Structures are given as C-alpha cells and as structure tokens.
Length: 214
Image 1 (cartoon, rainbow, N blue to C red):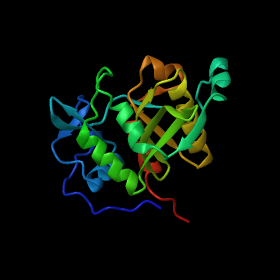
Image 2 (cartoon, helix red, strand yellow):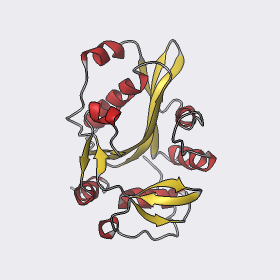
Image 3 (cartoon, one colour):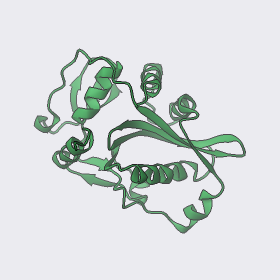
Image 4 (spheres, rainbow, N blue to C red):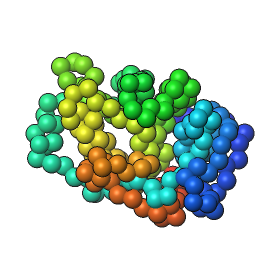
C-alpha cells in the first residue's frame, strides 16, 4: 500500500473556478504531500520560464479505458517486447527527461520528487524491454482508481505504444476509472485519446481519487 506523506503546506485554488488560462497557480514546492494534494485537486506541475506552475487544462486529455485504438501493426509489434512494471522507474523518467527531446520540461527537481513518490508507492513506470535493454516506457501517478500519465519515451519503434497499451490493460484489470494524459496530441488521438471539458474531468476525478466505501 502507498505511504501517505505529511500534508503539504500549500493551499491550492479550486480549478473549477479558474479563468480560461490553463495555469491555475504558481509557486509552492514538489514535496510528496504537495504533489498528492495537487493531483487530487485536478492539478499537475510544470515550470513556466523557471517558475513552478500548476496546470489544469481546459479541455483535458484522457484515454477512455475502453477506447484504446490498437492497430494491426501494433498487435504484431507487442510480441517483440517484454513488459515490466516498476523495475526501472528512474531510468524511464530520465529517458523522458532527455534534453535532446523537444519541449523538455523534466528537470532534476522533478526527477527527485517523482522518484520519492515512487519510493512511497504512488508513482509507477510501465516499461518495454527488448533484447534485455530498456526500449521504451511511461511513468505516472496512481491514486485509487485514477492514473495520471506524465510522459513516455521510446528507443525502439512502437515501444512506447506497447507500454501505453499495457498500461491500459493493467488499469482496466485493477478497476481504474480515469486515465489522464493532460493534453491530447495527434499521436495520442490516434491511439484513442479524447478531450473533455475541465468541469467533466473534475467530476470524474472526484469519483476516482477517493477510496470506495462499503
């Protein structure tokens, strides 16, 4: 079971009341308690010109867990890879943070923060291996029935797509309800990602992040 860290010292505004901007707040820190509170609130961190900003895009990109598009070529490709979970979290994150990638935003402070969340049982990696080498993967944050996909990478063709497919399978098998991908891109849309209004996303999130009661 994940270890709940001490609560952060920062109070986040309600993104449902935010203006049109995707940035809802700035400042704060990347402590585990701060990050978990942000995700439960519908926010995630990225820097803007060096300043820590907390984002709630409108619309928000999600992948419906019953709506992943798997092509014939991807089905053929899956057999080339071994899928592992949480065996190389920091390596996956550092591959996603490669400064040669365009629009990179993952710096050392983010690596340290999410590695700490991984150690506490909240952050996870889904990896694809080929010939004993790390070929691709993704990482993100799991809270109850919610998974926030943060970034993915590949070194071998289709490796990240197979990791995404495996993630969807794992989430479905484990009773998850919401797979957040922040923004849709042409690549993600080709795999089934869709945009939903912020208010709808927050409603789905509220249902997914809290434990079920019996």
